[in-house]
Length: 285
Ligand code: SF4
Image (cartoon, rainbow, N blue to C red; front, side, top):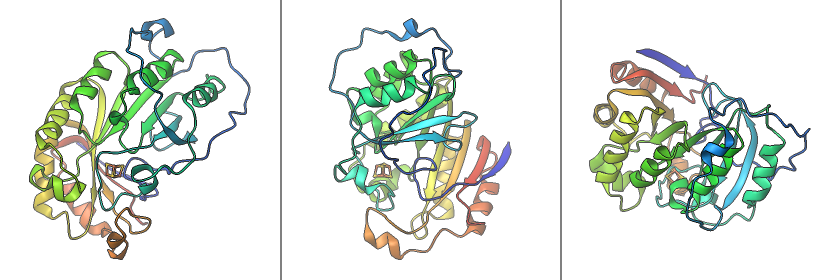
């Protein structure tokens, strides 16, 4: 087990960045193949059913934090099936913030970043709510980029489908609470059996992966985190993320304090045997 403490803005539930603005895609076109691709482009031209394009609310052209070990771009997909009170991307959850980027525009941006970027992070919202997700991932893979998919784990059948088609290289799943507290923490009617199915599938998938929990004062007690640790036991990595108030989906969360650094570090130590890497993200120092 390796104990890791990572710097992060801490104001995100899915990585370290907020949606960026639509990018003009400036930069020298490159004929080369992205470093992140493991397969020839043609390998990903699957016979996928056609669905409407995914709604891209915005993208971050470059992140050094959100895809472990890779230079990556982040695409933020609008829409989510959950309503976590602490969510820091309410614009992606409850309303269309009007900054959509077309799939075509984003894919053209990637064309200009071949040989410079290695991967693409697909986040939200919850990307798996969109039937067009496999097509979108396939188009990215065809360009030679590695794909990291962030998910809340509500749709194990979608995770199985995209992994089965070779469209994902890394999965990061939020585990929001012990299964019995999921409805409270996620603010939604969640089938906890599907959450468990996703956790077990990801652990056995052979795909690089991580689980993470945003730890909220007054919501996540020590026993809750130990229970989550038992759920993810045997994972590649498990991260505790610091909650910080501000810009939350439920304004009541803006009156809560940030999670104490000391509690996160203590809990990481107590959880260290549950995953190959156990870490803390977003500490205030
Ligand atoms: S799963 Fe929760 S935290 Fe993540 S985008 Fe949806 S509402 Fe926000």
